[in-house]
Length: 453
Image (cartoon, rainbow, N blue to C red; front, side):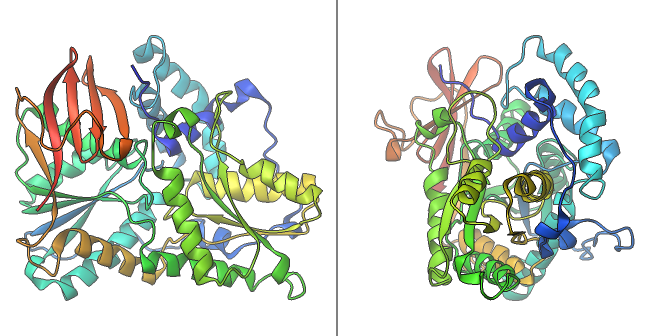
C-alpha cells in the first residue's frame, strides 16, 4: 500500500520542529545590509494595526466560499495546539504510539518554535491575510454577481482555528445554499489541495450525512492571467530596487515547497503546474532576467524534488552570480516558510556565509487589491458562472454505501494519476481522475465524485 501523501507546508513545519535532532541551527540575523525587501516590512504584524474586518452583511448568505489552507499559529500561545494537531495527524505522518508520542513532542518543541515565531512578529499572518483577501473577494462578488449574493467567505485551516470542520458547520448553520471549496494553493497537489478535499469528505462520511449545501470545487488556478500579473508586478517592483548596473544580471529564483519524489513519481501534477506559473510570469516580464525554479523545505534523507533553494544560492555565488531575487511562487500569503526560512535562514544567514552582494525577496500576494480581483474572478468563473447556478459547474456528489462502481472510474486512471491517503481506520481513499473513492478490505465502499454539468 502506498504511504499517505504529505501536506507539504505542514511537513516542512514538522522538519523545523525536529531539526535540532539532525543539526544545530544558527538563526542569527547577520549582515542586514546584504538583505532587504519590501516583503519583510509588509508582512510583519504591527501592534497598532486595527482588528481584522468583520463581515458586516447580516443577511443570510446564499453563497459561501470556503478558503482552504494549512493555517498557522496567530500568537506564540497558539503554537502548542498547532503542533499537537500536526503531530496527531495520521494523514501527515505515522508515528509509533502516536496518541502518546505526539503530545510529548508538541510539548517539548513548543518553546523553540515560539522563539521562531517571535522572530517573525509573534505569530503567523496567514489568517489576517486570508480574511483580508476574502473580504475583498466577497465585496467584488456582491457587486458583480447579485443573483448569487449575499456571498460570505469562511476560513478553513487544517491545524489551527478556524478548522475546516468548524467552518463547514458554520456554513450549514448559516443556511448557505451553494458552497464553494476554494483552495488557496494555486497549483494542485494531492498533499495540499487533495488533503483539504479529504478533510471535507471525512467530515461528511464520519457524520454519515448528506451535505445540506450544494458543493462546488475550485482545485487549481496556476495560470490565471491576474495571478500572473500579480506575481509579475511584485517581481518588477523588487527588481527596480537593485542597483541599475546590476539589475539585468539579477537571477530570479522562483522558490516553491518541495515534494518527495515518491509522490512526484505517482504522477502528482504539482511540479508541472508550478512550472507553468513560472513560465507565464517570465513571459509577462519579457524574459528580462535569468531565472530558475528551485524547491525549498526538503525533509529527511529521502529523495525530494530539486534543485534545492539553499544549494542553488550557494551554487550561484560560487559562479559569481551574487545578485539574487527570491520569489515565493506557490504561496498566496506570507507565513513561517517565507518570513523565517526565506527571509532569515536563506536571505540573511546563508547569504552572508556565501558572500551575496544583494539579495531581495519579492513580496507575497498578501493584501494586494488585485489579488482580491483574482479570487473574485476565479470563484465566479469556477462556480457561479455569470450568476446562474444552472450553467456548467463542478459539484461534489457523495455516493452512499454500498456501490458497484463510481461514474468515471476505470482500470486506466484518468491522466494516469492515482493519489492515495489513509483515513477512516482501515480505509484507503484513492483519487481517480475526477472521483475520490473509499476502499475497505479491497472493495469500493463509497465515493465522492467531482461531477461537471
